[in-house]
Structure formats: structure tokens, C-alpha cells
Length: 496
Ligand code: NAD
Image 1 (cartoon, rainbow, N blue to C red):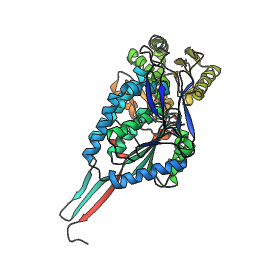
Image 2: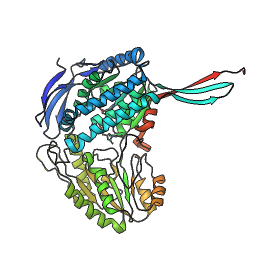
Image 3: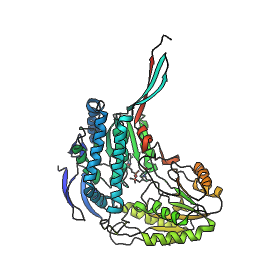
Image 4: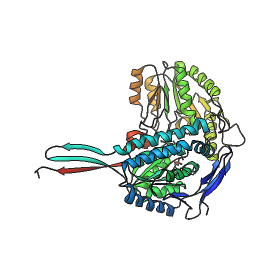
């Protein structure tokens, strides 16, 4: 069975797309012949069919990964690991055009304004963690004449990583960088909707010189391949990014073998705009914080609470800014910044939420329509006068839909901002720094942006409180998730 196919993308680029399971540095067919069709959300046409991993295939990946860990990677030079990550970053730089072209077709991201930023993100991650590879040693806790007590940071071994479709390359890089730098070997399961770019990365992994079995990349169904990763006794840790519902399932499955678990899940993040805020800034960041990537961001600030005295002004300014800024259409046209949402399922779901907003009495201040016959395009949509009981206020929509609501006092804003089971992101806009710092401590979220929104950095940890997740990714804390801490007591005196 073929494990690659020649693809010509809508921008005319022709390339060889790997379609097999990338295990032990080779592309192999799935054991049961199961395929997944990857669909271009702009055209609704199939780009390519890729092999879907069966339970047996995950076993193969585990055998290959365990062998690589034991025989090669465990004692691999830490400088060598650093060089490999830098080399992977070099190859992402070299193949930017091809990677962004694939991503634009497969995930519907505008090539220049979105897909290219994802490549920048991957390069930063790989280089940042390349710098950490030789700094994971450990600490000394006790050094007296009687005793030396020290802690070494050791890799877990084989890590399973399950990623979503909204940032196929960037989410993978968040996991590859720290896990590899910490000395682990990995099996990444791609989302059903967006397998193409990361399968292409399999070729780069070989070219960079990673030993066979260190990085394994498989497409597959969540309930089969994803579940096999979460339950497998040969996998030591699982890191998952996706919905809260699936995160719970993964955690329950991982409990069978007491695997170490990291979860990055959903959100319904609030942004609070006080009446002393710089309104132009709040409007720009408010737009960016929800509309970037067509609203398909876990930490989108999708609920904006605005103080009553500036409410009307803010609503008008956000509508005007959105009208002037967004440009929907061909993802290969550099003047367009708003592509389709990922799939028919999401398209129908988001339009359903828009209908429910209208039915429940919110005011549709902008957008709300699907502008084209073909493709899963949805206009940026702004609802004002949203109240706390409405479905669009409570549930994660994961699309370009923002809810605006009025508040009077700081206490009210905080109570309503925190009234959610989620706790991923949050934002405050105010010129009063004392208030910003006070409110930031009260917000129940893993991240607080002061006078910005969704401004992530590879150096700063990112993770959820409440039902938005467990553990952090990015920065030094992201590395921490991928090491075990071993305490070593050395008796050097004569004490019993
Ligand atoms: P999803 O939960 O449906 O799928 C995520 C991944 O889990 C996919 O690879 C899927 O195949 C796999 N999966 C599905 N069922 C599984 C099972 N039973 N066992 C193991 N794996 C399984 O999520 P999605 O629709 O792909 O992504 C959207 C969601 O992801 C949103 O809720 C969003 O907020 C969240 N997300 C969170 C972050 C974060 O960092 N917190 C980042 C991006 C996306």
C-alpha cells in the first residue's frame, strides 16, 4: 500500500505528501488498511487520504520508542539533543513555504497572517528548548559533612502526545520541544482533521538526524489510536491538548496504568474593560483575542465585560474595527486574514450557537453569516447585550463569535468573570495599575493578560486552572512536566 502521494495544492505547489504512519523513521501502512480523508475546509475537497493507526500500530510505535529510549536515547549526548532540535528548526526555516502551504490547505489558516506565524512559533520552541537540553541536571538539597542529598531530573521514557486541529504544527512543537529536550522519546497522535503538515515533518525528523524511534508521528482516530496511547502500559506519560470532555476521558483511561498526565483543555475566557482603559487598545486586543485563527483558540477572550459608562462606545468601536480589519476569503491571498473554520461539524455547530444567541435575545451587532456557498467560512460575529444565562455566554463556541456584556462594579465584573467551570485565560484593561494587579490575583485562570489578550510567549508557562487543564506547557515549567525527580541520599559520615 502506498505511503505517499503527489499533491498539488490550490496555490499550485506540487509536493510528495507522506501518508503513512511515521514509526521508527519510516512511513508504513496501517495494519488494518484504515484511512482518514483530510479535507480542505476552503473547498470541501479531499486533499489526501492518510493511514489511521490501529491498536496494533500503537503497539509497534511503543516497541520502537522503547527500544530507542533504552538503546540510544537514554545515553545520547545532551549537546547532540540540542543540535538535533536546532537542526529541526533550520529545516522548518528552509521549508516554510511548503509547510505554510500545506497548513493553509489542510487547516484553512490564511498562509501569511496565520500559518506563517505558526512556523515562527515552532522555530522559537525548538531553539528555546534546544537551549534547555543541557540544563536539566537537578539540584542539591543537602550538602553537609555527613550527607549529600541531591535530586536528578530524569526523563519519563516514552511519552504519548495527543494534539488538536487548531494549531497542528504549533501544538506539536509545544510538546516536541520540552519532551525531547528532557530526554524522552515520543509518539504523537495527530488530529483527524489535520494530519498533513506533521506527517511532512516526519521527513524532516529523518533529515535532521534523529535516531529511529525517538520521534514517532501517527494519524488516527481518537477513540482507537488516542485511547490506545492513553491506556498503553508501555507509555509512561500522556500529554493531551483538546476539549475538556476528551481530556476527562484521557485522564480516566490513563488512570488504569497511573500514567503521569498533562491536560491542556478548553476555555471560555473573560476580558474585563474598565472605564479608565485606553479604548483603542482594548478594541484592538479584544478583536485579536477572539478573531485570530477564526476564533479557534482555546484561550480566546470570548466573553468581554465592559463597564457601563463606556459600553456603547466600546461596542461601536469594536464593530467598526472588525468591519475595517477583517478580510474573508482565499487563504493563499496575502490580503485575506480570515479563512474557513475547520470542518462541517464545527461550521454547523458555530452557526447553531449564532442562532441560539439570536433566539435567546442577544443583539447581533456584526456578522453572523456564512458568506460563501462553498467552504466553511463564517463572518466574525459580535453579539452585544449578552446575559449570563445565554448559551453563547456559557459554552465554548470555538469559532469567531464574541459576547459583549455590561457591568457596573469591579466586584460584579470579577464574580461574573469567574462564574465558569473553565480557567484558562483572562484579560484586564485599565489605566490603574493597582486595580490591574488586584484583579489579576482574583481571576481564576492560568493566565492573566494586563492590557493585552492572547499574547503568549514560548518563555512563559501556559496552562489551565479548574476544568481547563492540569499542568503547564511552555517555558521552564513546560520542561518540568517531562521530567521525573529522583532523590539521591549519600551517607558520607558515620551516623546510623
Ligand atoms: P478533541 O478533544 O475532540 O480532540 C483532541 C485530540 O484528542 C484529537 O487528536 C482526537 O483525535 C483525540 N481524541 C478524541 N477522543 C479521544 C479519546 N477517547 N482518547 C484519546 N484521544 C482522543 O478536541 P478538538 O476538537 O480537536 O480541539 C478543540 C478543543 O481543544 C477545544 O475545546 C479547545 O479549547 C481545546 N484546545 C485547548 C488548548 C490548550 O492549550 N488548552 C489548545 C488548543 C485547543
